[in-house]
Image (spheres, rainbow, N blue to C red):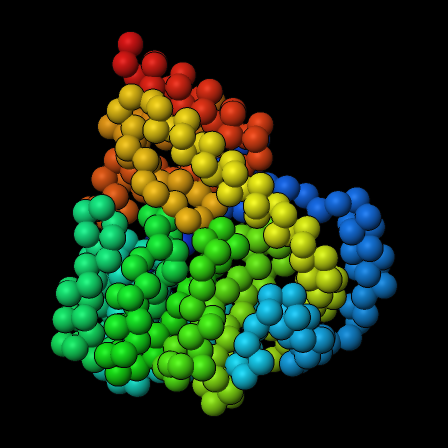
Length: 359
């Protein structure tokens, strides 16, 4: 009998699985989640909906009611169509599968969301990464040169970028849209914290697709992402969407929460205030370099980052160590902006960890 090593594609054998750090018992500040719960009245409504959900039936395959709720709650352009996914990861994979002609290129910036590279490998696309500048700004000339040279079928731009947290210059991205031979996906997972978007550019750029998720806004457990684009694109991508990919509970509960989307927007506003407070506290520490953020996390650099990360874990604080993930991320750590008491606990543990390392 043939073994997995004999049958599975070599590039898959060479991959490492996406690792999720167990978080039980920690102050969890590693995954860019909204730390706030929903109001009691809304939770009661969701409980009643879940209790009466027709779990014995398949969900609405087209999720028509949920799409309409998304349009109304998020003020999406009337002329665009929507593709829903089990998180934005599924949408990235659908688009890559659709465009994966032999030799086709997927291009992205680096460092950025690791799933762009991974999904290119899954789908058999040629991957090209374009490094950012040392300060994580966009190298416009390098990007445009790579686009002209590689002629990518697909370009992913995280706007703002993960894990660096910054927004790239809008004019540079508009020029990218003008020269790209294929489609350009603006991944706006952190839209609620950046308060800037390319959604209004859809009508002017037929090769533009805009992707968002509700995970960072407060519904990570429901796994709902969506893409807005011209109907001719969505109609083709929808052929690759597996039937019933958005389950009954996600459709019902997300639809109900979106009726009260002001609750989520108010929480995002509080997190933007906390982001400024936390960034100021980090910047006030000696030996810590803090990078600008338009997201719900902050990237910072500190000498001996791996040791600091371990020291924080020993104090029951879980953040993300990015040291070793990319050369530009040497000695970098990423902390999610949590609730005020979580941020205070993180800062206290960081101060103690740095003091212990210096002793």
